[in-house]
Image 1 (tube, helix red, strand yellow):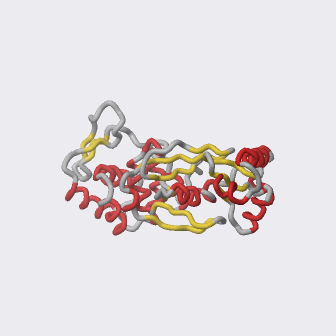
Image 2 (cartoon, one colour):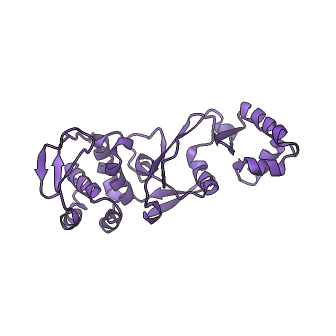
Image 3 (cartoon, helix red, strand yellow):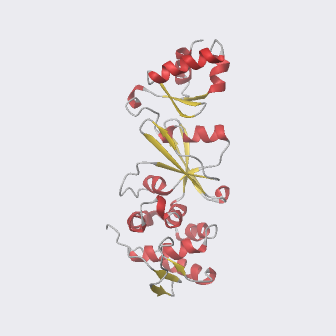
Length: 260
């Protein structure tokens, strides 16, 4: 079998990814000859290689991207890596209907930091969270299978926990104003128990700021019961001086201006 026949056969079976090991097993020739065939297919844009030894088949409708869309191969790549994951932050918020600005990068939570992926016009950013296997997730169908996403409640907490990956706190507040509509108060507290208490302190303040009060009182009780000290709203600024809010045990050391 030649490389072109191999990818046609895979596509006919509805499979749009393969490893170099799969290619060696199916295509006739020496390893160097097989790699040469794959390089020609890459040059012709029929396949792409998001990471070393992992290839995706690029249908004609995606050739202008130079790669298969990220949400059509992330799950398959994570299975090859044997890596727990979920789509997170702005990418998850968009899936849950908070699409104030379409994220330009697919954001994926994993156990440890990994180098970002660039494949044609596709960008994937990895963010690390140690207790990833304990975090509640949801599964959604894609044209190539399933994809695992953070729940709306986890997404809200992580947006304030990783603000540098979400634009800034003003953008986070804007997204929260839309995301709050699908947040369950019970599930929010359950997710908060798996997260640093400072995330709940910041999230409660921002939800209150954008007028989303449905979940606020329950979250405030959780903060009062579990927060042992005041935390700054923005951790990375040089000063921790600012208004102190006893309700959230929070130091408001930066001005947040959501686009509502």
